[in-house]
Length: 338
Image (cartoon, rainbow, N blue to C red):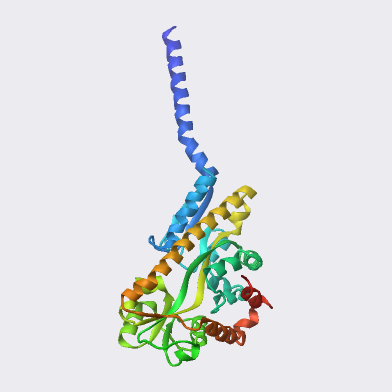
């Protein structure tokens, strides 16, 4: 072989090697481009079950659909500010988030029934309502009017009444005159009034001092929040009114969901349900343990006549402006769901 032929051969080998290396470098990028991008935005902090559930969602998809999805989890409202996620999903700027009944009710008044007191009896009732015909109907309304599709229902916690001084609370009338801190919106203040108390708006960050000084007589929150904020240090009683079984919904933008094939939709919905189940199991377990924790801290824990509270609160809502937006017969259907 002549020197010139050797040079051509060598250059050919180098070119081939370079092409192989280039293809190797480009392949992961091409594969990444072919993946379905699923950006998640949540205000949840890392230690919250509502943050950890997104890891379950991601791992579920990695197992059921390896290499098909690029799931990006953004905690601490680092991608979108809390409350702005529904609009971002409707625009197609965000694929997944959790949205509340209060978020939905702003645009769909019929959904406000799920912001009222004593609509859900417990977490099990909540799941049965939203996983049944009622959920199918109401979620279709959300998909049609908000451009987002709810995939699963996440248990947020059951709100209880927490008092500075021990009272004999059996029925709503027993809370008469109690300055009960509630979040500042008219919907929350109406709930406090329906419970029989004197609702007092106060920022969450001011509640501890308000309880300590007597500016307020009590507050309402799920038990994990009572422990996290250390309200048990400045209160003496927890009344297990269970007046609001709260929830949020894992939802996906219609733009992203409709771009998927049927198999991908099935896998994404299954992952959302697995994430919700993980959260729900752990949150319910935590709440169950906290009753004993508060008793050990010296608090009196009592259970009132919950049926009396439910009847009074539901009657108050049914006679209010809020109920005018509720679909006819929906409250009865929810109450009869077993």
